[in-house]
Image: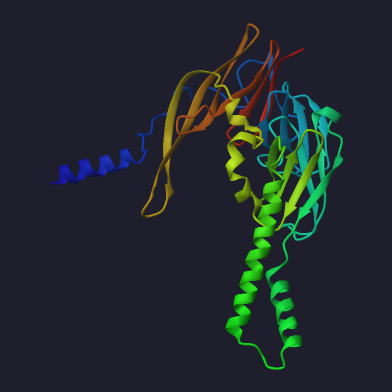
Length: 318
């Protein structure tokens, strides 16, 4: 019986991702960013980066102050801005950056919408705002109540007033939906920034549509054909360096009493080559990952990213 219980216990452990710990295979090997060859220099990237996305021409990231930083694909800085954006929502795949000047996080009052694009060297320019707004439900209710009181000496029945208010509110919604659908005529593309704010592009103009109605529902029929894509996350650009082995040093539990699993952690043993010069190190990894990935490689420079998202330059000593 005890062997049966032991078997079930081991099965549960390994089915949850548990791996048997081992000893470090190369205890003398330095841990990244330290390495073995003094002819290779590995240094911190000159600025701190928080989140990295890219397109075919540029790298987009936020610095330590949460301001947008734009790099070329060789990771050279080309533009430091003073704007804060959501990298995965506010930038199109072609590199157009949209920022919103508002007085509330949910855009209760929209002041201006700005655009920066590669076409004008990422200089800020204002986008025309097109407002398609409905009368507020409470405004409709109060208006009908005032009118009914002025026309009748007696207080009208609440059921009757509720019916009038609902009819007027639904009519207002239908008017707004009609206006929104009319905007699809001649539309080339749309780029939603929120449920209530989207960039619409036509042959001869570009506008920022602001509506208090959830207008994305009205654009569902053209969503796949005309929605502009966002940037790609940096992990799609990552390449694993040459590994000459990995080791699991331990396991940590992630989850609760009902659902969860083990994350195993250890080292990835890596050999890095620049021209004909090689260096070696071990990198902390999780779940058999690389620990360190290559984002860019030329004949004399490699850009690396570790598990925390921190960037490094690897070059030959001059």
